[in-house]
Length: 269
Image 1 (cartoon, rainbow, N blue to C red):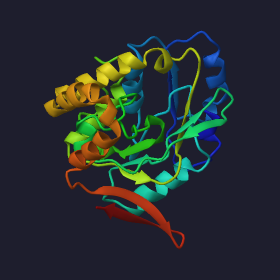
Image 2: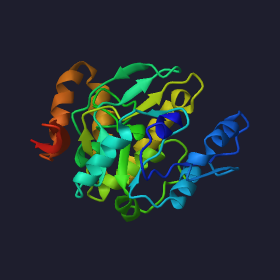
Image 3: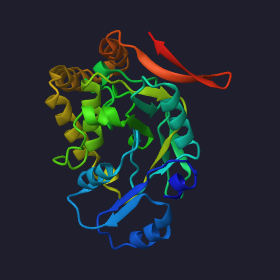
Image 4: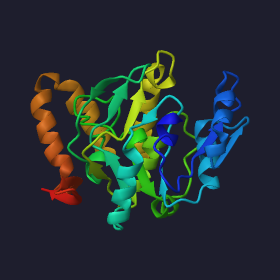
C-alpha cells in the first residue's frame, strides 16, 4: 500500500478489497483508511470476485490492480499518467522490464522483453512458465489500461478461473484488436514469497492459460507446442527463432522511448 500511496499522485482512486482475512491486514488497512477511496473486509468469491467488486466501485479513466504481495515503483503512476494523457490513442500499456523482488523488496531479476503482438500472444509466445519459446510474460503488476477497453471487453474478470484471470483478460484485450504499448522501464515488482500460490501452483496457472488460448480458437498453438517443441528438443534454439518470426506475422511492435525529455512512440518492423 505504501508503494502506491507514497507517490502522492493526484486524483488517485485507491480501492482496497480484503477477503475477510484475519492475519492483521485489516489493521494495516485502517491505518491508511483516510487516504483510500474505499475499502472493505468481507468474505468474497475469491480473488477475481474481489477485484470485480473493486473495479465496480471505481470511476477513473486508467485502471490496474496490485496484489497484496506486490508493489509499484516510485515513478509508476507519474509515467503511466503522462503516457495516457499524451497519447489518447493508446488503450493499454505494459512494462518491457518485468521486475521480481524478494521478501524484503530487493530486486532479484529484471529480464527485458522486446514487445508484444496479438498473433504471438494468442499462439503461446507469452505463456508464463512456458517452454523455451515463451519470450516474456505480460506482468500484471506493470500493466494498465483505459476504462473504455475494459468496458469493450466485458467489464469484468472471469470468476470461473482460479489462477489465470489476468492472462484471460489480456487474451480478451488482444482479441478486441488492442495491443499493449511497451514502456522501457520497470513499473511493478512481483514479490516472491515461499508460500504464495503462484510459486506452488504454477503448473495449474499454465494449464488454465493454455485453456484460455484454446478458448480463443488458436489451435496451432497446441500443435506447435506439443509436437515440435516437445519432440525436437535438440533444435530448440533454431526453432525458437523460426517460431518467433512465424508468430510475429509482420505485426507491428509498439513501444515508447524518451527523446529530449519527451515520450515518443516507435514501431517495428
